[in-house]
Picture 1 (cartoon, helix red, strand yellow):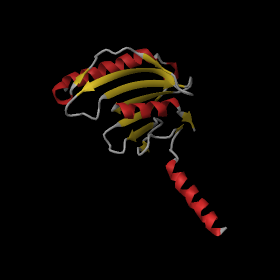
Picture 2 (cartoon, rainbow, N blue to C red):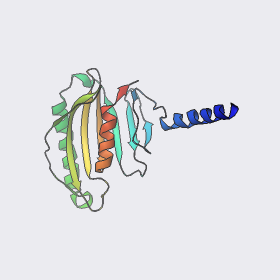
Picture 3 (tube, helix red, strand yellow):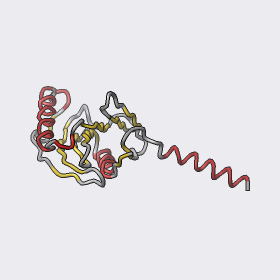
Picture 4 (tube, rainbow, N blue to C red):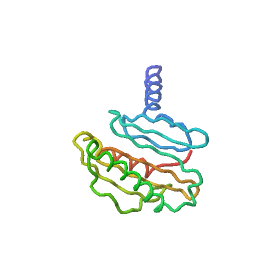
Length: 167
């Protein structure tokens, strides 16, 4: 009996590390092997989620007073800034597939909103094929998620965003 109790204790201990508690106001399970840090400072909440190889990332940032904003207008401003920066460094970072992508809808469980998707063609930054800006709201708070990485990473991050919950 002691033997089976020891195995169960070890199993519970091990499983608790598989779903480590994420500190901060959001509850989510990161992609397998990813590291998460909560960098909230001065009332602004921010998470950094990095792939195991550190080549792909997702940043989640709470936008103060964001529930009342027009998401499409903010996304257009964000993408305009992004395009300007990429064009200025095009020889170094590569070429965007489209400079003015269409704003699309994203439907999650608790958080839903809008997003824009860029594809980057680059020999130097081959692991960063996609950059996607999301603005997601639960009606009270709005979070910006910026995902950069390959197709598999984007799919994992979309699963995370679709299942995002509040603490």
